[in-house]
Structures are given as structure tokens and as C-alpha cells.
Amino acid sequence: MTLDELLALTENIKVEISELEWHEDDVRHSFFGLYYSGIYDFYIGKTTFRLAEYLGQGKVAFTQDIYDFNPHAKRLYEIQEHPMLSAGFHNDLNRNVTFGTWTAFEFSISLIFDYLVTDHEYESIVKKLNAKLVKAISSLEESSKTLILDILKKSSFVPLFRKLNFIVKRIANCYPDTLKEDREFVEFVGKLRNCMIHSNGYYRGNYFKYEFGETIFEFEDKQIFSQVGTNQFVYLEIAIKLKDIFRKICNCTNDIENIPYPEDGQNIAKT
Image (cartoon, rainbow, N blue to C red; front, side):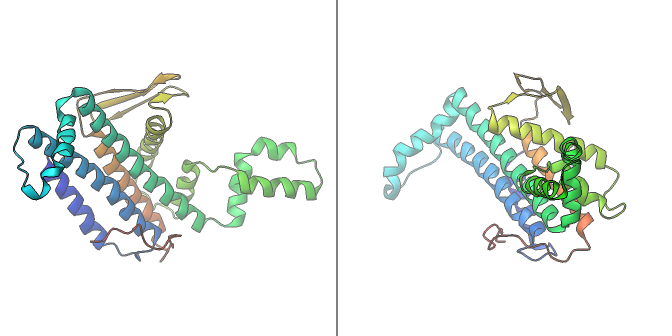
């Protein structure tokens, strides 16, 4: 993917944001602002590397007014001179675009879930998540059971999959027939993100393999995850697919006029 194509991608997202029908402070609208920020940073990073190449080739002239910046420019073009620095720079871009877009996705799904779920529905989900404990306390007095359930409701972690399933099941046939495939993709990106951000690539869990395009990702217990493929923009393409899935999820909320974002609009991308 060329820099011109990356620039066009960022411009297209800005156009997409300008055409959204939701209010600017709606969670669904805010997702695109947060998402745009992650893609924009990736584009700027790739542009910076190209600038470093031009600096290294002596193709960038410094006027007298900014000549004092020259020592910093020399440090910048070191990136393209040393393979280790170059690889680290691009790996950071891949990690950041994965982290940024996944965070926007996960956070937005959680906010939508929190807005839609009723107390009764949430309690039912918590009971299913803690089925063994709920069964164990069934013989207790009602007051004790109520106390424990209240604690569970406040402390239980509801996985993203539960939240996603709740949203897409609320309206019959609101999600296209790619749901199974998209669930597997979301599971993959969740594992990828956790490995890249929390453990420097180290994975703990059941064996998991996922093919994305021509790239194969493998996750083996107590091993650094492996990636085999030649697509240097695979992480950007993963981020693009996340946005497409979010769009599909939003189809299942078309009956909701506004889902307020719990901030003051600073997350909104200005177009």
C-alpha cells in the first residue's frame, strides 16, 4: 500500500464520519472518531519513515531559520539506516494500530451493551457466567443469596463475546450471515492484541490458529505467537476489517436514536 493510498484511506474515513447519521456524541459516531485517530497515526508513522529516507538521501534542505533542527533530523534518519531500528519502528506502528483500533472497538461495544442491557438481563447474564457459584448458594437464605448476587453483579467481568452476542441477537436477522466468521475474527484480534500489548508476544492458553488473507497466525501455549506471510500491511487490513464488523453490529441498533457517549466530545474527529 502506497503513501497515497494510505492518505486516501484517511480521507475516506473523514468523509465517512461526515456522512454518519448519528449525533456527534453518540457512541456509534464516536467510535469512528477514535478509529480515525488510530489509522491517522499509522499513516503519519509511515510518512515519517519516508521522510527519514529522504533525509538520509540528502533530498531535504534546511533553511537558515531551522538549521538548529538539523541534529534532530539526523537522529530521525537513523531509523532507515539501521535494520533493527527500522524493524522496531514498523513493529511499533503495527502494535499501535492494533491496540488503538481494537480499544475503540471493544470500548464502543461495551458502551452500547451497557446502554441496552436491562438490570434483569444483566443479572441473567451474570448468573450464567457464575452458574456453579449460583448453584452452590441456592440453599442459602434469600437475604444471603441477594447479597452475593449483588456482589457478583458489581464485580463480574462480562466478556466481549457475551456483549457482542447480546447486541446482535436483540433483533432477528439484523446481522448478515457472516456472523460466525466475524466472531472468529474478533476472537483472533482479541488474542493478538493481548499478546502484543500485555506480554510482548507471549501467549498462554489453548492452541489457536487463524488465517487472515495469506498470513497465518499461530498461538501456542507458553510460546511467542508466530506470524507467517509477506503482507507488510496485514495489521492495517485487520484494523479495516474491525471497522467493517462494527458497521454490521450497528445494524442491530438501528431502532435506537441515540446512545450517548460518556464524555464531552473530545473524541470526535473534526472534518
